[in-house]
Amino acid sequence: MAVSEALEASGVPEKGSKWPYRVVSLAWQRRLRVWHRRLAIVTAIQLLLWTVSGIYFAFVDITMVRGEPHRLAPPTQSIDLAKFDFPVTSTSQVLIKPRLPGELVVGVTDPKSGLTEWLGPDGQPVAPLTSEQAISAVSTKTDITVDVTEWVTTAAEAAEYRGRQLPLWRAYSAENPSLRVYVDPRSGDIVAIRNLAWRAWDFLWMLHIMDYDDRDDIGTWLLKLFSVMALLTAIAGIALYAMIPWRRAPKD
View 1 (cartoon, helix red, strand yellow):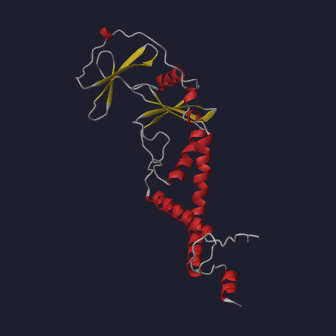
View 2 (cartoon, rainbow, N blue to C red; view 1 turned 180 degrees about the vertical axis):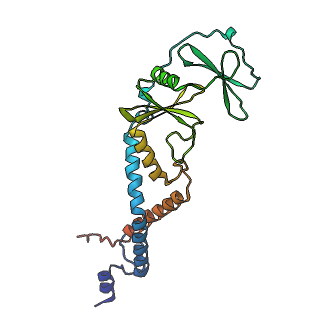
View 3 (spheres, helix red, strand yellow; view 1 turned 90 degrees about the horizontal axis):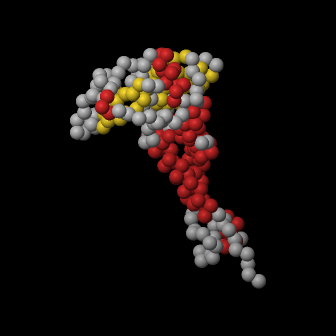
């Protein structure tokens, strides 16, 4: 068999061939193919998880996930500032809002620490909401009916109220405990509404960013490692595709 015929049978073009790819030795092709398979095996499951979670993020309405449709617009009311007496500095940020029907509170935020102190019109710190008042706040500010409250004081990893200042009131209905409302006992704010859609989002977000503890860190070493491995897998696949000996049909 002639050398040119042997090269052609082996899939390697002879020198000067006009086939549209660069000549690479079979040994290097085999090595690249082996590493491509190894990387693909390791990254395949994570690539599938990225795809599934990405599809969920793209198709599910984020406002529904956050429970925004349950929130009611706050009523408009006039405020007589002459009734308020509270200490502020020139750099303080002041917010006046209704905590309960007929009760206004003043939030004074220290720009240096970022902490907010909630005061009554007389300038004294307000007492935390009671369980009954927390239920009233939920019924006033959302369309959710609740009859059970729990006092939350302990932060837990991956908790659905993470990032919120404790303590909090957790309120829900005994008939539908999966729909939960978290109330700030100082300001009366509805700081979070959690439902099944949010929990599914949170679980898929954990898988997406590969942070299995707090579910908030998008710079984990696992995410960086698998991102690089996925990139190398794609590059190796493109390179192998470019090495396929596509023959050009002979011209008549």
